Image (tube, rainbow, N blue to C red; front, side, top):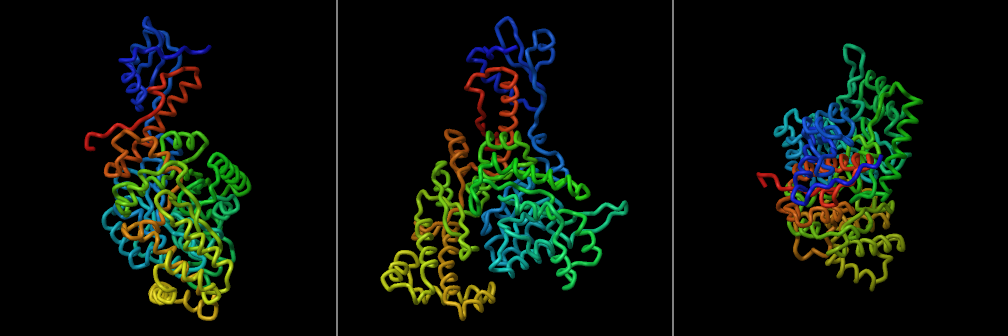
Length: 522
């Protein structure tokens, strides 16, 4: 039977919406003397003809409940790390206190600052759960080791592993050094890993135990015990794997509707082969900027959702007001790809905001130059002069001097590799611009606005379209916990609307969408 349209008078549409939004209670579609209506009144439903109904769906019931139970959070929602500390201690703290998991943006941050940030979080949050980003840095392995050392020193119980193309000794060290055996024989995983991936072949590395050769290497150098080496063969490398679709920063721009089912299928296949490893949850990231996107991800089987781009326009993000204003004006099509700083030589790209900045164009010029010439001295004088005036705004010899100072403090091995390799030296010089450009954005350097590197995916534009005309349109009102609340509440609301639509109910267009209403404290 096809259920007729809800025919509540226009003046009652607000009440219909409020009924659907009362997510903790069931909702009935009934036929009464005035037509078809929606009610949460069980007594009224008992006295009228019930056409269909939906059960309670509070936001904390979205996704896989084991995600919250395992990580000690209330919601199947996480805020992914944004590099250079944009995902700040303040952001992590605000979300942790509201029942969400958040990851500190350690990538690109000098070890001393990471250490200070993790010390602050340990003091501020105590036993509340949070994570720290561990980004794969194949050209700077010392940085990976320093981040893992800091996580171990401050008792960080979870890392978000990102941009990995292969397992490194440091991610394996973190995982295995937290293994022990409970009195009942269960393997205790004190160090949890959430791997953010965009390829099945990388996901499989985290779905399986650590490679025996890496385990033996760590054992030989005393980083793990013999018992931890043994237990390492009994657990997968990750507890959760996030399908990273079309996101800001490092991304393969895979469609979520293709990537997520692909990773779930890979997980299920490996679980059939290795059932003793237990289940690994698969979450969704990339494009999650609206309730509709979150609802779609949960409907496709995501255990949890992860937001990124939208959070850096929030109050708690360590990002300049100038950049937050640019982000708040972004549209869905205002993103593009540009060479990355951390994997420049490999040709890896990141997704950035195009509107209001020339960073992407200038970064591509640097990469094209790197590919074309063997070293700085081989660049024709006219082209070198153009780069010095338009991009670097100083002689390349001065840039190299700054590189020497920087890497002497951060990772001296980088300099050793450039002594007899002109192309390596050129790469370090070009990475100077790529590395500093995000810092100019974070600090809001006024004379470098055109060079801002702002990591951003299309979710930012979708978010801006969704909140247009509401209090969240203004960056000053975008607090991360409230944004998370509205995305999950809206996802639950839209899921109920979808359930009714599947049952044949047609709801007025005015209420078949979710708009964030300001909380009283806003």
